[in-house]
Image (cartoon, rainbow, N blue to C red; front, side):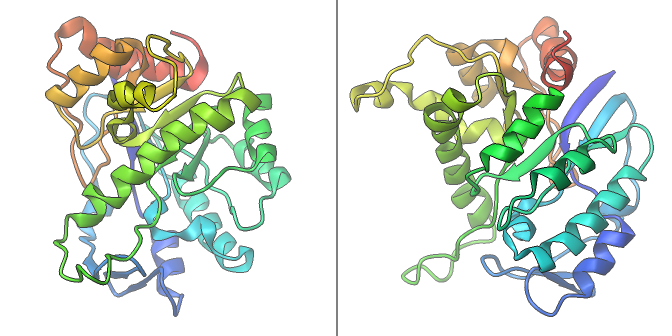
Length: 287
């Protein structure tokens, strides 16, 4: 049975909360309106049913590119609460990452939410997380999931960017920046925190040679508490990450319904590690 650490399900309570808004992020019928991306037609079927055959656990999360977590608290919390209520009611094999407001961090509210049964906390890669929030996770021995945040609008000189632009440019850049920020700033302050970076951290680990050339260090040192999930990549990228960091820090993620979980292509033992053993270690420290 496989573990998938990265899925999205928009439950009725969350959909209604988005439709109740009059400014982005909001839903107009099934048209998603955001500040940094073109209107997106949501397929309701993507969120009404899903094939979970072979899944031991599928962790859903708030869609951080919506920008919900950075809204003022009076706007953020109704959306986050609606997401929490819907996600906790999905039933097996689903579990969920908690979300929280970053414009005014509230560690006590996060603690109360986590104690309802969430697997850990997801944050947007654009957020520099409050130390108090991270301490709540460490106290409970729960992991952090770093996911792409809102996409910045396309440069004025390039207004006609293609539909795939946010996923390939700002999302990847955000994850790349988050990987280095967590190594340089967060890890020294939170040595026991387990962190999972979406989409292989934008392939940031493959730039170690340039890091060394520019005065950084760390070549050959692998942080066993920093994991990378595989969504939207395949065997070539996964193989490159494994060559740099080893297989023990790679975990399976699909980003369903927007993509499917990749086949690692590294053999049966590596596939079992990525899909079963490593996700369990991420979530509970137990292999």
